[in-house]
Amino acid sequence: MTISPFWRNALSAVAVYACFLVLQQMPTNAFPDDSQLYSWYVFVVIPSISAVLGYVLLRGHVALRLLLLNLTIIGAIASGTSWSLISDPTLPINFPFLRVIAAFLCIVATGLFVALYLGSKLVGHVRRAT
View 1 (cartoon, one colour):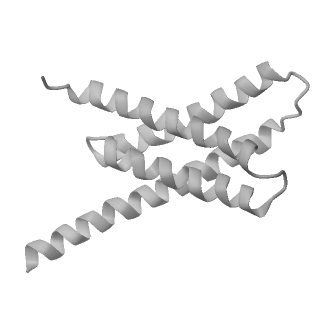
View 2 (view 1 turned 45 degrees about the vertical axis):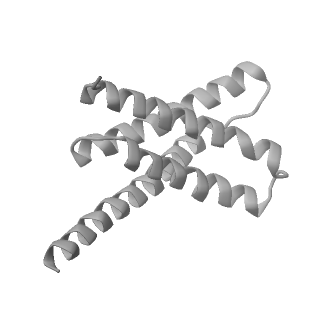
C-alpha cells in the first residue's frame, strides 16, 4: 500500500506539530523558571528537533517542505498559547512578544533545515565526484 505525497506530507506535518507541542510542554516541568537551560531548550533544542524531524519526514520541493515546517511550528505555538489561556485565563501573555518568539523559532528551524538540505546536496555532489 502506498501513500500519496499529499497524505504523506499531511501526516508528517501532524507528526512535527505533535513533536513541537510535546517538547514545548516539557520544560515547564523539567526546568525552573528563568533558567538559562530553559532558554537554551526553548530557543535551540525545540526548533532543532522540529527541523530535523521535518527534514526527515516531509517530502517534495524544498519550498513546500519549508512552508509546511513553518506552518506547523506557528500552529503549535498558537494552539499551545490558546490551551494555556483556556487552562488559566489570568495568565499574562504578551502577544506582540509571542509573534517575535514565533518568528525567531521559525528562523532557527528554517536555518537548520536549509543547512541539512545543503549539506546533503554537498555530500551527494562529493560522492558523485569521487
